[in-house]
Image (cartoon, rainbow, N blue to C red):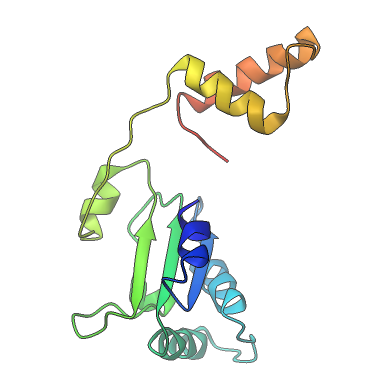
Amino acid sequence: EVGKKAEEMKLFHKVVITTVSQPLDIKRIRNEIILQLGLDLKEELDIGRAQRLSQRLRKDTTLLILDDVWEKLNFEDLGIPFDESYKACCILITSRSKEVCTSMQCQSIIELNLLSDKEAWTLFTHYANITDVSSEALKGVARKIINECKGLPIA
């Protein structure tokens, strides 16, 4: 939603969204960002791709959303400029772990509460298109999935 809203309001020249997840794969993450920015993957070496990404991110304002971060990321390895003199790239990190955000020196940490059982059910059934007339078996599977998510609105 944040990415869509930023695009609608034209707050940035480009909004890039990538899921980090586990296991951490710097090369995959970097390549996804490069492709979303409209760059090609000609450069064979990772260091060249990181440099090209860094140069591109310095040109225009970019919102970079890194979703589902489980451990500290090295922005330099990714090719994301991260110094005081550079302000054109804003980074939004989503993580289950406050410690990850702290270790990455996030400027602002916004903690979200878990969904109640009722909220989780409403959200899940809405997006899964489950209604009152859906089979009990389907509703049972939905309840198992909701319990597995433990109140987190996981995609």
